Length: 310
Ligand SMILES: NCc1[nH]cc(CCC(=O)O)c1CC(=O)O
Image (cartoon, rainbow, N blue to C red; front, side, top):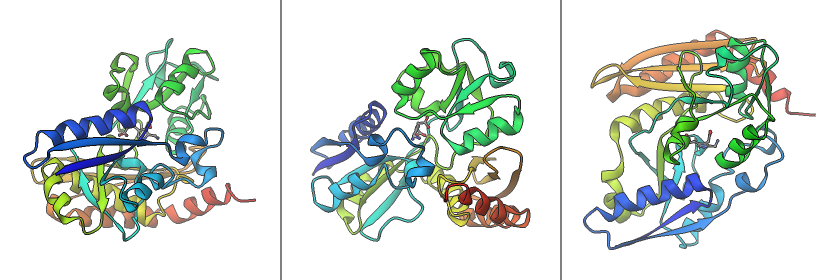
């Protein structure tokens, strides 16, 4: 069987598609793999934050189009770019083994967030990163920074920011490990739901392809990321609200899920954690969601969304 992979054209997306291609080519039953490149709205609109342009789905719509029109068979997505609910024409097969899920501190002059002097400017357009930087380091400033990884690094190097925060996974995949000054502990910055995990999407009902691709899916990683995604889904999962969710294994069968909701200015942060078995990952998600709601997550979410209206 020949498989066509739909991919965004950014260097990171292409790396990810090529990674999946190489794994597919090693599978029995796969006779060839072609990568079909395309740009998405999320790639084109760079002057506004994702929160303002309507966030989720922007990076995957064009890829889904290609699947529907039969121009491609498989879409490879960064876990955190996948909306919580897919249209019924599509199926999320699961997630592959995760790369480093943490955020990375990148700077030419400073070693860590804690090392930055008062008034230093940190670049990030992610409300989740912004809120968590300001919560722990209220003497810092955060300014918007969008574009692909190379663009963001270029803006750091041109001196517009003292530091920037990027996903460690993206930097590592592109061989940019050396730019990471400090991998930020999850206690300092809880990662985005699905960060570092690649998700595989096909047309619903393409059972032959589903069966073929199955060896690429990591069931443990899929359970962990699914628990994280439940938190985001229950809380309205949009880029307009600082939300984080991160699940880690305790042992081979149980895991801890942590969820966080904050105000964009970082002045209010609610965090909850729960444990469950991998088999019953929904239990941990339900406990975290319930805990966050009890502590006032709903009001935080509503006021964050209000900030984007009018
Ligand atoms: N927001 C865009 C995006 N989507 C996925 C990654 C990184 C790779 C990953 O999380 O798998 C990035 C870059 C970043 O956040 O710095």
